[in-house]
Length: 220
Ligand SMILES: C[S@@+](CC[C@H](N)C(=O)[O-])C[C@H]1O[C@@H](n2cnc3c(N)ncnc32)[C@H](O)[C@@H]1O
Image (cartoon, rainbow, N blue to C red; front, side, top):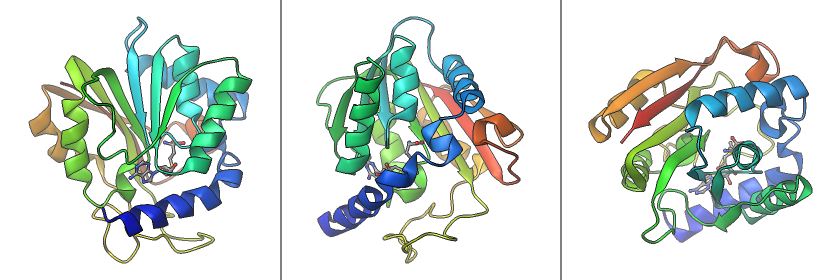
């Protein structure tokens, strides 16, 4: 991605940061929604304390659930104000995690590897999502888990306060990506893969939804 493209996307999310957590599935402020995500997250990560990389971590809602579960969490996000909120949220909860302001397509973690790489709702905004997937799998230890929470949203591109910086056809999965297409992209990179449909789980979203939402869980 060009520096200008990265800057434009970071500015968009910096502007969105103050209100981001108002959506039920973003801020997880309702106990029923938080508990539903906590249950799901527990099913995606090992029972023992693990190293987890949360790419495109936003305001850190899932990072927080992971840290609360005893995992060592690194969050990466392009937007400094999203990361600022994530840091503040963890501190307020008395939890620790490391947060990096960086491009999640190629996380700047040197030689570090992880037990789990988790990403929720990031792939749609990456100019080269398949390159990012290859980078992410390389960051996993053997047997490590890739967890991608994604969808094809009916509301994609509608009702935004400002147009999305990459909207002019430059984002291959800009309207979201269906489970079949994402599985086809991930399958050659991993040894095991399953898709958990999430559209029917109203408590995750704070109400019923009728578009495609799922988690793809794979093992290196
Ligand atoms: C829809 S939000 C999802 C946030 C979080 N994963 C969640 O589910 O609550 C998308 C996030 O991706 C971040 N983002 C967009 N492009 C990015 C990139 N290339 N590298 C890192 N973060 C990026 C944005 O700043 C924003 O925080």
